[in-house]
Amino acid sequence: MLNARKNPRGWLEVAAADEGFLLFGVGPAEIGQRNRDGLAAFLDDGFEGDMGWLRETAAKRRQPQAMWPEAKSAIVLGMNYGPDHNPMDNLAAVSAGNISVYARGRDYHDVVKGKLKQLAGQFAAKTGSAVKVFVDTAPLMEKPLAQIAGLGWQGKHTNLVSRKAGSWLFLGVILTDAVMRYDEPETDHCGGCRQCLDICPTNAFPAPYRLDARRCISYLTIEHKGVIDREFRAAIGNRIFGCDDCLAICPWNKFASLASEQKLMAKAGGELPPLADLLRLDDAGFRRHFAGTPVRRAGHERFLRNVLIAAGNSGDKALISPVETFLQHPASLLR
Image (cartoon, rainbow, N blue to C red; front, side):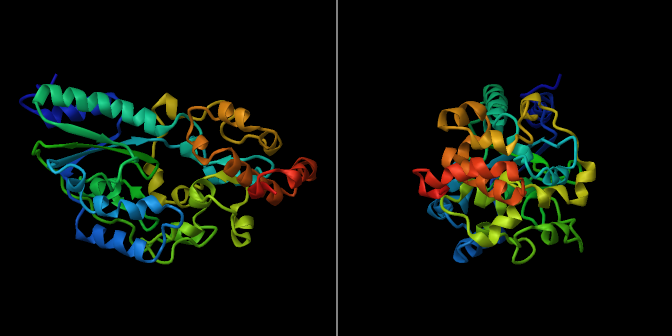
């Protein structure tokens, strides 16, 4: 067993692997000017859409020390959630709702953050260092930190890609005031490949490494609060929460491994629920059915909006009658 006081980094890396983290790296608590410029360009072009919180927290996103001035090092960990099949195959199940791979099991925020808090607490107790834990809920740019810590690089689809683990990854960050040995930053290995750009159903990538969230199906079905424009509806197909196309097509996923954390695996019936069953869910039923999963983030009305679009795309005549009942629905979003 490694001595945490003599070799805190080595001890933490072993402990993280024991908790199910596939990737581990350490870098300075710094995202670099290129990433700051990229954030500014994203916001200048209005690519954030309804996600006003991205603009409101832009100053904090530019530098981790804006949230915690004492931060010196970023310990970045990656947990895989690879599926046991090609998610693209689910697009053919037109009478079922296609839920993004990451949202079929327990909410990763809870799973990953719980493990990170445990690791960070032990690290702090053994070393006397101060720590703060982040899992995709604070204004911290985790993907640039992951690249600087050597875990992978941001691909042309803007997601993190690892040579070791592909792109089915959840990221977590432990910021600490300890100065540690840093890993070498990862370099870009996309080369001339543009499969992720070409497969996007809604042309959400105006250029490599640039995402217009307003056109992204994940944004439209999860973050967007209003009516989804007609120009996107046919392309949505049966996707009722998120989209995996740009991840699933990436050649680097030949190195991806199956989800190792049981809680992140699809719950029973969580992969392709029948649209007919989903159309019958009232608010309480929606909350029960998707309790503990990321799907609850959409809320009942927005979720039904997505289900109605999928039903319209299905061509399934058996869905006509249940869809017609929404013509009298009190919520204008669903009529």
